[in-house]
Length: 212
Image (cartoon, rainbow, N blue to C red; front, side):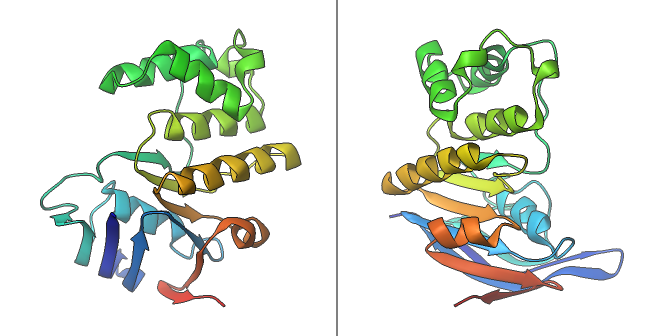
């Protein structure tokens, strides 16, 4: 069983304490939800966990490896943070194939299977520049899960999605949890988090507390 430990993590920007002594543990086979008001530090916390930004004090540890020390970034991780960038003149499949070529781990059929799962296979010939916001969000989610990574770090994965889109995301995340993955989700949608998470945390003014 994998374990991701965040221990006493602190992050300060321009003398403002964005993260203040944050600690929690994420286990495999578990979905952790993080909620809180805009500007509370949700996105910054995910950036620190993944290694996309540094932290001032504390430790982010996957197994025996410390992020930012033993490893530069969190390994084997699917990520949505802020607005993932895609190539406007490529289709959903072409964009994912381009990204998949970096690690060369999955086949064209596996890419198409992911697009089918997320509800984008029927627009396979549509260029990204013509996508609606909901379609763009689905593609962002598809790139996060397509390589079957053992960790998922997702920032507002249901943004701009309709009810059917949210239901699709929920079903996929429940399936991913059953594969014994570590899943951390930051979202302002408390009802969505209540339906799928095992542990809910609330961040406010840089402090993190567990919710009932």
